[in-house]
Every structure is written in structure tokens, then in C-alpha cells.
Length: 133
Image 1 (cartoon, one colour):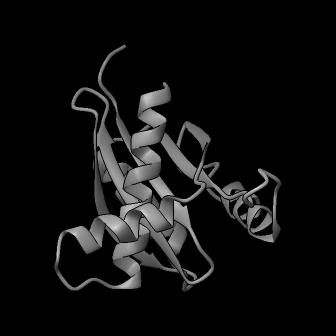
Image 2 (image 1 turned 90 degrees about the horizontal axis):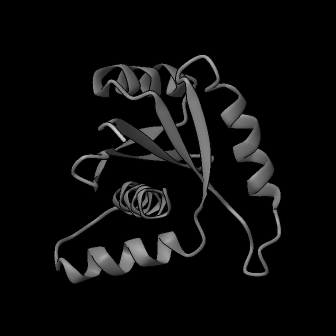
Image 3 (image 1 turned 45 degrees about the horizontal axis):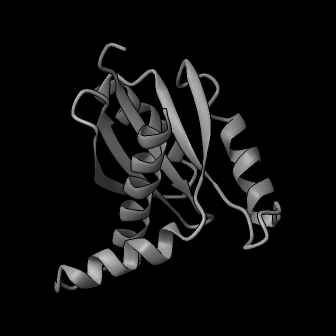
């Protein structure tokens, strides 16, 4: 498989965590956080173009039993708006990624924000995607 850039989104109702990766290196980097303010699709498009990504990986929320939730429906609706931005949009389970992200940030022993957690969660989702594909 040739190297390609990936953009990952951890979609929330207030913020979207963004991570990027190159499949050749297989390291996901917590990139940024986008506020959900009506401009989020434009900002995502700018990142996808800048990274040259053909695929957007979107974190797919489920509850602890693996069932869909209200947040799942929100993410599915939001993802419909991404159809014109990337050639391929794929879902990746995001179970427990926010907890793992916060633990990672705590381990770094530096101050962090909710936005940092969202971006780090997107990186974990992207790592999981690359491991399974």
C-alpha cells in the first residue's frame, strides 16, 4: 500500500478533535481542535487539503454495551456534511479514547485543556484505525 495522509475527527457538539497521520510512518499526531461554530466544515476542508488526505477517519461513539447512542446519531448526521470534502470517510470505534487521552496527558505532567483531550483522543482513534487497516 502506498503512503497516504489521513485526517481523523473526534466529533463533539462543542469541539472537534483533529489528528493527522501518514500511513508510511504510522504515527498519529494530535493536530488541533476546531470549535463547532458554523465554520467547522470549512476548517476541516482546509486541513484535508493542506494534508493532501483522501480519507477522513471519524470516531464512532457507542456505549459500554457497544450500542449506538444519541451521540452516535449526531456524529452520523455531522459526517454527511463531509461527503464533498474527502474521497473516503470511514468510521472507527472510539470507545474509551477520551479516558485514554486524558491518562496520556496526565502522564506528560503538563497542564492541558478539554480541547487537548479531544485532539489526543482523535490521535488514539487514528492509531487504532491504522493498526486494524
